[in-house]
Each structure stands twice: as C-alpha cells, then as structure tokens.
Image 1 (cartoon, rainbow, N blue to C red):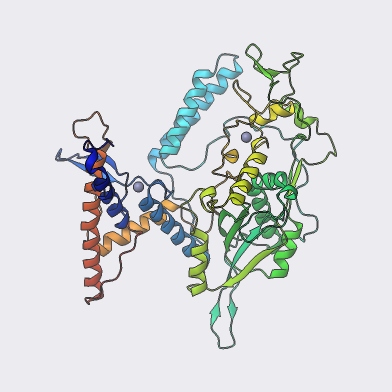
Image 2: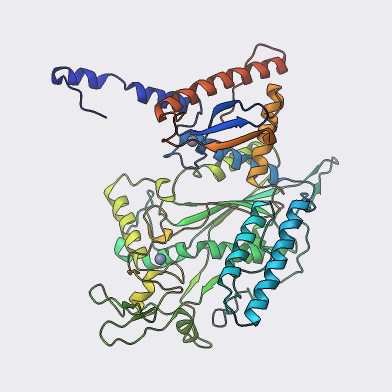
Length: 536
Ligand SMILES: [Zn+2]
Ligand SMILES: [Zn+2]
C-alpha cells in the first residue's frame, strides 16, 4: 500500500473503506476462497484453453476463512456419517488395475537386481534410488502402503516395555465395529452411541479463566510432558477400550486445548460403554515414556556440544569425548529401570449417550469440529496479563523438554539425538511441539479410526460434489478430456491476485444463484432454502 499523496485529505480518506478490502469481505461473505489458485485448462480434443480458479483448500481460518469453513463442514459430515452406522462400512479394496500391476512387476524386477548387487558386494546406491522412485510411482498409481519397509526395522530393545494394563480384563477383539442394538418395550429398536471428553490430570488449581491460582505451584513440567505424549496416551486408551469391550470400537476424535491450555479430547464413539466401564479403562490406562533421564543439565547454554564433521558425532566441548548416541542412551536405561514419564488421563471425564439424528448429536458434532479451523494456541487467545503469563510459563517449560528422539534438546542432557546432524541447538528444536502455536501437542487435530465411515475425506468431498452436480442438473466434466497446468506469475495469461479474487467472487455469486434456483425448483415453491457454506 502506498502513502496517500495529499496530506490534507488523509484523515478523510482513511475513513473510506478500501475497495480491495471490500472485495475480500464480500468473498468471505459468499464463501469464496480468498487465495484462489489459477490453473490453465486445455481441452485435449479441441485445443480450447480456459482459465480455472480453484480454491486454496487451507484448513486454518486465519489463512482462508472460506476454505477453512468448507474443510470444517466436511469433517462434520464425516463425523455424522460414521457415528451411528448400522452396517459394517464396506472397505473391500478395489482389484488392482493393469497399470498398478505393471508398476509392481517393475518394482519386483528392481528388487531382484538390487539384492543381487548387494550380494555381489557392488554399490547399490543407484538401484536403491530406483526402488524409491518406483515406490513413488506405486503410490501415484493409487495403491496404499509400501511393498516393503523402507529400511530394516530399527531395534527397540530397551523401549519395549510392558505398556498393557494388567488390571483390565482382556477379551479377544472381533472385527465388528457396529455397536449393540437395543429394543424398547414398544418394539422400536435403537443403537445408542457415545460422546466422551477426556482431560489431562490436575497440575494445580485454576481459576474460571484457566489461569493457575498459585502459578509457583502449578506443575508446568508435568503439563508440558503430558501435552507432548498426549497422542500416544490416546492411542493406548483406544487399544485398551477395544480389548476390554471385545470389538473394534470406532471413533472420530478432536484434540483441542482447554482454557488452562492442557489438551483434551472430544470423541464420538460408535456404540456405547457404561460410565463404570469407562472409568475402569481410564484408571488402567497409562503411557510410559522410556526415554533417557533429563533431570540433570549436562551442557548449559554457554558450553554446548560441538559437531565433529569427520566422524559425524557431537562431542563434549571440554574433553572432546564422543557423546552417547540415542541407541546407547536407551540401552543405558537398563532393566528394570524407571520410565522418564508416565502419562495418564485425569479422573474427571464426561460421557453421554447420543442417538442418531437427535438434537444432542447435532450439538456434539458442533463441539467436535468447533476449533478445527484454528491453531491450538488461537482457540483461547490470552486477553489478560495472568493468561499471557500462564501461556509464557508453559512455553518456557516446553522449550527444553525433548519432543521426540530426534529433538535437539537431547544435547543439553549429554545425548546425541537420533539421526544427528550439524546445527542442532538445544532450546531451538524445530519440532512443532515447542512452538507457541502448538503448546506441546504436535499431533493431528482430528483422529479418525480406519473403519469409521469407511471413507476418506476425499470420498466425502466427492459425495458432496456429486450431490451438487445432481442438484444443479449438470454433468461432471470428464477429467480425461482436459490437461491442467498451473499458471505462474511469469506467464502472459497470469492473473494478478486482485483480478483472481474478483473472478472468484463473481463465479461464486453466479453459482450460488444457480444452486438456489435449482433447490427452489426441486422444492416446488418460492421459499428459498439457505445455501450451505459447504458447497464445493
Ligand atoms: Zn481458500
Ligand atoms: Zn524438539
């Protein structure tokens, strides 16, 4: 933005809305993407070229409110669809196509060549690279997973400890994913499901606004560690619950911070569990972290370990001694040893039965998707000094806490992180968990079990598009008839952002009008139904 030239009118001019801002606001109001991406679409048969603007697809509202809202609505649809399923979802994979089989054959041939080379003692670097490329092609051809593990599986001798819950009765887990049906006296059947909220334990009393009553006694270190291992604890809980109930319980879960900035998880569970059973599973669930001890700082800020280029190791700056590697440090924990940290859920939990299609289920889905368009730290913006101080103390506790085996912070405790490389500085680990935006939880915000709805997000998106096309009465464009390419700023047909935005608003308005008309036609009356903001 340039400075207005005439100073005398500056104050007046500042009160006028900026035209560009108005376009942006209008775009948001109509649910149009504010960062549309320009693609050049060429009809392969006729050679006709046109410009197509596609939404950026970002999931955070502070980047693109419209795309974030569409993503949230899609998650809500996914949640709704899986929650009360009455039949097992169909997830039989499609048979492989000729194309897919061809890539697998190539991969098999390359593997033989590589293994022969390795056996003969010749260099396998080129063939290894070929294997990686072929694996990429296999993924691109629409196949899931890898044909073989990328590297020989790492040994986990020292970390393999008892994690299961000895106090919990265990049943054999059947592949059933659908909950029990109940029959009411009047013969009506229903299949209740559950909405559960699990929280972390107490780290000290907090006020209504989530700030500690006594900051000096609030256990920030425990809070930081629990946040770092929250995802693993949740996994453990689901495993225990499945064993306890004896069927493959499915869930749609959303992780978000509470006001006290500790993570909690809301989950929609298919089927139902009693409060007593839940309490039993929760009490028996813990996650042990078998990491080296971090109670003593070996290298403070002024005396950091140095990288030795020749051997690829970090050395003690004073003695030149090579620091123990990650594997050596794990071995040194010894048997029986003690875990570095044990994460558990708090005693308090919330559970309520929810019936399909009820007002409650609608409300719960709202809860589950409420904060998905925000970064963890933006869910509860600190507005007061105590809230800001609380967030800062937690961030400080997270700063030197190791976030993973690869964390730079291990150097502070005299251990070389896994896959060490030059430039690692304790307190400046690039891991997401440390930054103020994530507050220790770097995992996924939405956790959906594999057999929830039997569909991936892309499938739900395709459903949505199909519904739209059929409502509008238009047929989908045949993807095989077009070639697509991105338009770069250097291209003569590149549209500047402002122009793209204007087009996006016009496209969207036209399109909404068409949808409204189609719906009115379908409803057969003049009462317009409101257009969902979820349209593709
Ligand atoms: Zn967008
Ligand atoms: Zn880290």
